[in-house]
Length: 408
Image (cartoon, rainbow, N blue to C red; front, side):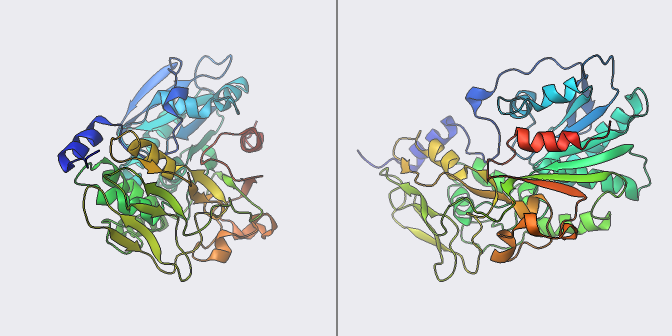
């Protein structure tokens, strides 16, 4: 077999599904959502409303904001992620007489500050249309927890009465999320062949979320200026809302046990003629600095090095199968087949999801959260999963704990 040309690879990438990293349900599990009782057009997005059982309007609303991806929010994907065989969260909320308001965005990778305006509009409308005086429950999954956290804090700074009694976050990266340097580098390395993966990694929301980011494949990892600006703006509005009770759940284990993924090991290795030499690794630590070898339809192999990074891929936290997502996409392109010995990595460390102070050291990442003093967390109450599981996975363990703490 002859090596594919750059034009052939570019055409193949264009024909293939985009390489997008987000915790959305597999396409085969996504079926059309039921028709909402109401659909609200909002600035920068849409809200889909499902009344609670026996309710004739909005009586006890629970607003849940979408997380990160590329493109507009999908009601079908939201429904599939929240209403699944592990735990039917939407049905259980409605059975308890609570109205579900799903908040989506026109562009999920837009700035968190912009999408917070959509969440603010949804909160205003839910408060205005509510029948009775029950206070709102507002929160979100992954990035959605940060979107609503900022929206509520800003509303309080502006002395707006948001009527929210409980704020919650579900595996939200309060202290930052993580995509391995090798994946970010590969995304930018193939930018000329297909820019969608790189565009996602360099989107405003991604830069605001990621603990370490690179804009180009040869860059050294560091904190993006957009993340610094976002954290400064979050601090300017007070950091957290003060009026509602603050709850957080993590898909990562709270006992300090990691997920078993070893540092500096090959996760994606090229075997197709056009990609032989590519070696994408989990985050290296210690004296090992090699993060990736990159080669796609070129003769040269480029190395990506990283120094003084913690053992984060194997840390306790919600996992994301990013290496597998990439491998599945490449294996559909003739000449770019790969082996994929490691599928995922820690995406949101447990210490980040429950807002434990500090994320800079190995000790912090592997902390025994269950034994820490309560004031080490920046939230009023939290629960970590009993074992590390997929990022934003809706489980009976986490959801029943959360629902049981909502006011009657």
